[in-house]
Image (tube, rainbow, N blue to C red; front, side):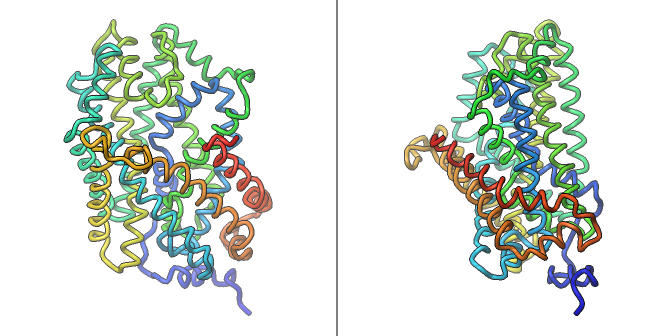
Length: 468
């Protein structure tokens, strides 16, 4: 009897059940688009302040190990499911699960991506406001002024809503143009732009007086600060930074060709993701140390601390400080855009294929509903601050439910499914491209997915709820 390996192209077409399905046009497009999904505000904002809180280089080392043991295997899981199913995340899980109850893990991924799209658009809109504010000189001032600027803007009843809509409209414009002409084309433009912006700011930051202290802080490990919290925080950052369990990776993988090396792509994307995170640290810490500001300023680092850092660091040459401030918030906006595009695509692909409607109509439904979610989340900051559930504003509730419950649960269930219940021959065929690639690391991947990853995700989950 012939096996799928004998006719891999035919097998792939049968499994896709869609001879016209779009796909990425190049290997570069695969890497840049998927890396764009992973690279977001978490790299430029969350990673630096977490490194600052946990001793700099010591945290980075643990983070890199976490990416190898947790991030890459989890990413390969979703690559295999997405490419095998050649469809939206929900249907892809259904095909891998053979119609069993495991298919609902895919629906959880779609729901998670949809909810994150709504409130992530709000934060993305803040980035646009800060691009505008930096351009007109509205956020250059002392610490007290910058703090009041953020508070007044984020609680304004109209401004954040407008910027949320603008960001979703830009995202919508990309999505309706399709996979190659929209997602891939934009990724090829904005990802190099992101790196150029990063490098320009890194050079400017490292040329400041006493910048060497910040570089030393970033690259000189302080192992005395290592404890279980640092290990668990690094594990969590590696999981969330790579967009695991949001449906993004699985959806993008459904556009991969059968010749795409899944493990190699996961490694390349992880390298890009880590490089951006480290460069973000090089961008922030030298400037912070130059003006004597503590780099472990927490979540307020980007919108409150850094405007003051740039203002003070370049006070002797205000023109340079002005340019760096504008470029920095433009960088944030670009990083947010690549992530929001992938999140939007999760729901768009789902509606398009499950409801059998055009991409344009599906994208419009997603844009409109996420705009409504974004409006309510934004208003819960100020104008409607009474709009809350369980003591949390709507924004905080969406962030809590998706980030602390849905993502780890989805990631854990995917690992259990792929490690113990998914058809082993199918997993092996996808991993090795139907036997055309060496399976040197297949055993390592299987071991990590079956044992290491579930334990790591469970530890992350318990740590979030202060059990550990």
